[in-house]
Image 1 (cartoon, one colour):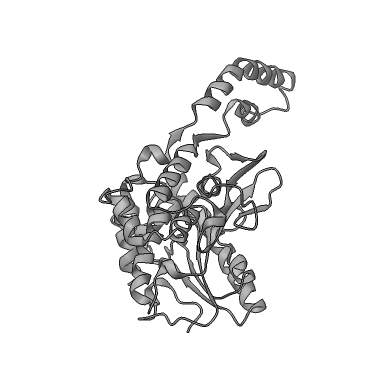
Image 2: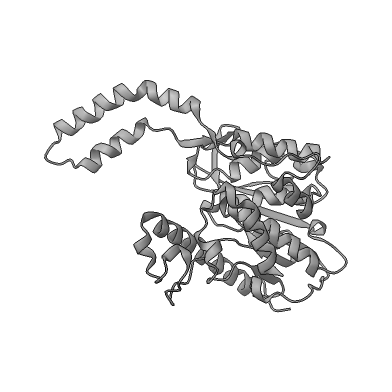
Length: 349
């Protein structure tokens, strides 16, 4: 088995080795989660004598935590696709309100502090007029903003509903498979792992909410006097955890890849004559920078693991760098969920 296969070069079948199998699901926003669901549906067709629900270990970060938690509870990619489209008889479709629930409490709290913050910032600006810039003034006013626009509580409720409706368990200790959900501790900067052996009293749905709390977009999730944010801040995929717990085959699905625009391809996003990414403004640069950072970190992580664990097979499944559809979708765009899921299925098969 070649250890570095991309999604467009998967073998017709995947042979099952002796030892534990692990599925590591990286982050990538809503579009990343649905890409992974589509890819998992395709992987089911490649596996012999088992399905993606038969892995021994699941490791999920951010969007991957959501998908991994469902898989570990026996929920199949087919059921997830039905829930995405609203066709499942029991599990309701995830809605915009489950993902984008405004954070009214913190907005109100900060609003009450706004007059005092304005007076303090303006006074400081006048006192140090010669040393201050407009940016300094705006920075001091940022204290009046909440820690995030949205609250993850609605997502936690949806996950609890989906898991229990399907007959699963919201307790790590009750899961038939090993599940590791990754978040980042805001106050220490350290990786936080939620599993049956670490933070095991935390409900699975709450761990998912913590792992998916994208900084600035979502307020940190407080658990036992600790604030947690997106697990991808410390690394978008924790393959080391899977190997540490005995995996000899690790399949990693990563939806975030930087776009290769070296040929200035004529694609809809860049216009009829192609062009440079910088010509599309701030959002294009921000997206590409995020993809470069997360992808470079993942590749380095895998490189180091192959050096220290040559006995472990690592299969990386991800979009092609030329896949402009995956590169230019807003990672939190709700309306493209079914299109991206279908795209994930087709590119892996």
